[in-house]
Structures are given as structure tokens and as C-alpha cells.
Length: 501
Ligand code: ZN
Image (tube, rainbow, N blue to C red; front, top):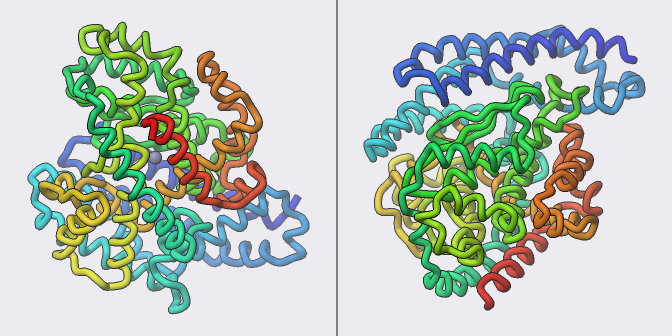
């Protein structure tokens, strides 16, 4: 027991409460708040952000933190307390260097910028969003600059906020590997994939039935409705208040069967992670997922690795056909599996197949690097975006709504976030490889028994919250640090088998 740590607790608890309130506002903003609310609610959110910062950034906490970092004090700390102190030091580094009035201004700006993005996407007018994007980028550059202190690269600072294990020096070789191995594979697969008739997916699918089936799928993979709810939003996401209140959203389209189904499996993967964090950790600084990379590894494991496998659909497909007999009764399970794994270059990241997905990420990563290295102006961004799509995927977006305006992240200032999707995907493949050695995973899927899979992930990853980082998890679970070979091999094996290459 550490007396110094006990003294820190009230500050941590109060800041947690403000943070939870902010999350709840963000959830409300994305799901139920009326369109015109944002400009006014932003003021409330700004004040909450200000109070959150005051709880943590003050002389008392600074002194306690400094003391707790001393060797003598560290001896009295439990492992969880040590992890909390480490996380607090990180939060301190993030917040302390930013003047409070600038931090508040930023938190007021972000929801407004997000609304401008929604409107300009609707109107296909990048020029309406551009001034807000510029403001967001300018502030992000300033903040990253404060924190980089002339030593680090500002973009590395931002990357580190989402996963401390993946800086540019880690991502550059990883992405070069994907480019050299996956672009040729996509070309080979793409030619074969063209023969797969996927028109069944774009018939009319009653939205109430879609909601019913998505809810079923969510529970099937392990979403606990006593600890979570599902709502609707323009862009599916997960939001946790704590491990007993985890919320996910989905988006339903009448003329697309797959979209909502795989989104709900994806978000359920995130939710299962948060719901299974140990009770002793929730509502602390280490009470959530370890990193965005680890988070995406779980969502993409459920969505793609198991969710798009034949074994997963074997016990389920009849149920889906019964729901839509007119559309699906002539589509065999084999046909459906080829359909949900049809690989082809496309404009929209969230709708992309597994094979081309990471190329969408690489494009964003390269553009973000250019932005934070002052190599591109805001006005030039759509052009650069389209050029990169042509270069890597061989297609040019027909307009900005399917180009640069498609993702919400930049409107919130979430630069450095996108690489987590690629890292997560690769981490998922690595975990999958070691799970297959430890359990009859495919048999479990065929039996419709997902409990052993969930329990394995809970006991080896989820319950630890953020007390370890991505590489520490991989070392402990798989016996080696991040290794992108598993991912490249996974894709090669899967697509060679599926397309009989
Ligand atoms: Zn996700």
C-alpha cells in the first residue's frame, strides 16, 4: 500500500468522472442530438474538458506524480498502480505542455469542425470544410510541436498517442512490405474476383430485418446486452463509459446486406474487449483497451479473420437465407463466402475487402506525414488523395465524398489514428496464428461455439486492460513481438485457397 498513491486517488477519480461525462456527450452528439445542437453543446464540452484538465494538471498532482516515480515509492506500488502511474505520466506529458486556453479552444472547435465535415460531405463541397480542417491541423501541429520539444518528429508524437509501439521507423518498413507483397496479389486476385457475381448483395434488404439479424450477430459473437446497447450513427463506432456500459452503433443501408453485418461484428469485437476488462481496472487510467492497435486487432479479428470465414457462417447462413428467401435462396454458402471475400480496388475504406484494406491506410498515412512535414497545402489535399488512389489502387475517386471527405477522423483531429487499423489487422493475424496452435478454432466456429475463443482473448488480453502495450501482449501471448510476416502469409494463404490461384 502506498500512501502517496492514496493521495492521488481523488484527483484520478474526479478526472475520470469529467472524462466519462465528455464521452457521454460525444455519444449523444453522434447518435441522438439534433443537428443544430453542436455549436452550443460545444461550450459545455469545452468547460468539461477544462475541468478535466484542472483535475490532473495542477501542483498537487505534479508533486505526487514526481514522488511516485521515485524508486523508493515504486517499491510500494502494485503492478496495477505502477501501470496507472506510467499512464498518468503519459497523460501529463500530453496535456501539461499545452496551454489550458488552447486546449479548451481545441475541444470547442472539434465538434464544430465535425459538423462542418458532415455538411460538406453531404454537399460534396470540400472547400466548405477546408478552413475548419486547416484550423484543426494548425492546432494539432502546434500541440505536437509543444510536445516534440524539438527532439521528436511531431508526427511520431501523434502516432504515439494511439500506439506507443509504432512510430514512423516501425511503420515505414511494415507498409513497404505490404506494398511490395499485396499490390501484386491484389492484381492477380482482382482479375479472378471479377467473375464473382455479387449482385445479390445490392438487392433490397428490409432494414428492420437487418437490425434484427445484426443484433443477433452481435450477441452471437459475445456482446453482452446487460452491459451494452446498440444505436445508429452515420459512422459506426464504439464508446465505453466503463466495462459495464459499452455502447456501439451501426449504419443500415437498404441496398447493401454486408455493410451493417460486418460493421456490427467489428464494433462488437471492440465492445467485447472493453466489457472483459477486469473490474479492478475499469474507471482507472488503465481501464480501457491497451492501444488503438490492440483494439483494432480485436475488432478486425472478429470482423474478418473469423467473421468472413466459411466455418463461421456454416451454422448461420440458413438463418440469413430464411430472413431473405427472395434474395438469397439461390445463393449457396460457397457463393456467399466468395462474395463476402470479393477483393477489388474500391474508393471507400470502411467497405474495402481484406486484401485492399491496408492500401487505404497507407494512403492516409503518407498524406498525414506530408501534412505534418509541411509538404502539402490544405487546398492540394484532394488532388494528392486522388493521385495516390490511382497509384496504389488503380482508380481515381469520382468526387470528394468518395475521396478525401469519406472519413470522420480528421474532422476530430485524429491524426496518427489510421495506422492503428493496419497494425491491428496485422496483430490479429499474429494472434490468430498462435490461437490455431492452441485450440481447434475452426471446429469451434463450425459448432457455433464462440465461448472458448472469447475466453482465450479475455484471459490473455482483455482482462489486462492497458497494463501492457501491444508488443508486451504479443510477446506474452505469442512468444514474439510484432511480426508482419504473419499478416502477409495469412492473406496469401487465404486468397490462394479461396481463389484457387
Ligand atoms: Zn474499429
